[in-house]
Picture 1 (cartoon, rainbow, N blue to C red):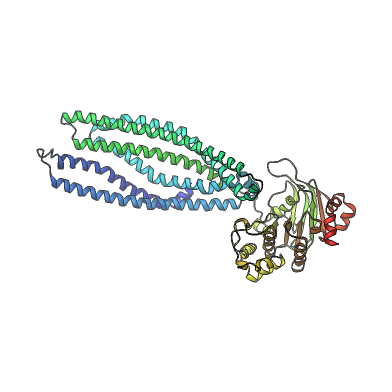
Picture 2: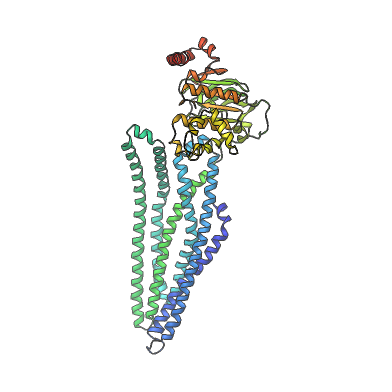
Length: 579
């Protein structure tokens, strides 16, 4: 944490100096009030005759000290917030940058809900911890030790009373904190669960409504929220008990001070003003301890949150960058060389001994039953995952040797589930090429068969897309995503079942336009429909993670049983469409 604190340490130091000024003003005032009572009101040094001049003089001094203390307190708040907010800002940015480098398995391990909690709530807790430490530690320390010092200066017996109560107060503080500390990490983990449920349910609200599962999800969220509230209540009960004990001890100390003061006053020892000042110092001392209790609560919670934030900041990307970022000669050639793959944390092999070569400018389709590894195979090309065995080569170079940015600039990927952002349609298309002109955006949309429906909207390419593309149909979202891939002008285009929501005619027009405008790009088409792949140069058929056959549509139809099964299951539709 020092890395972040050090950058804004000057704000924290200035805040600490102003806090010292504020507390000193608070500590000086009871002594002045004691003199006002004893000398100005009771006239103990003047034969029992009050002195109005003393009241005015010391009263104005108190007003001046109060104003100066308030001024110091205000500036303290300003500089505390400058340090805390800036530290939180830097930490949040670094966390987000780190998350952007995570591989898919790392993201899965943390979970979306947990990452959201860490970047928002946990960093806020750390930010509050820094602010409370700068402000609270100085204030409580000065109030406690300053009150004891001034109590001894005022009357030694009053100081001893406070010292006798001090061990009991500290013992109660330590006991309660030991009980509460383990609950703070539990609180943040439960908040992770709530955020994860919220994220899932908001994203899948249509499925929830379609399946009439609202009541189930309400109960699931309610159960998670009840667990959070239960833990919070346990923490609150602990600190409520602590406050009760602290307040009780405060009144006991005040009562003893009054009793001792009354005896000493009878012996001409303690004056009424001194007794009043002693009560004020005792109150300040115990208020300081109560503030210390709250401070330790904030520190404990802040440290628990820092531990969670540190897990993100200290996590190293699992996919290490290679050193190659130069130009390649082939520009679009792909080779799977004896590739086997299993997802991290599992032993089941999704792909086994895959050998496949895709030449520059070739269109290769991948077909197979659901779960046979088609998407996994395509994900290895841009190195979303590393192979378990073997190697994936792009332009003759192992993808693990590439700089990841250089590799992914060669590849454009469109997925079956189209991810759109809450921005204009044109901006969503230009996501693949931020510097693209309006003409280039429109040209990509024309190839993707999206221009007609975009132009028919009121605002055209300036039409704002609702969150997650909810304002568009599945086919419209897929076409915008395809346009986004096309405008990138990558050497390799991967269509991962990204035309599943398109009708066969629109799909055929898309591939025809793409072949005319991008004949030199290598295309990998993952699809379930025969109509989507039959025009490919070659088709690779996967079965149980292995390549069953590779060939043209006609070759596979003649000699591959798996492909024949797929063909015959769709033959009625195919015959109807193609006559």
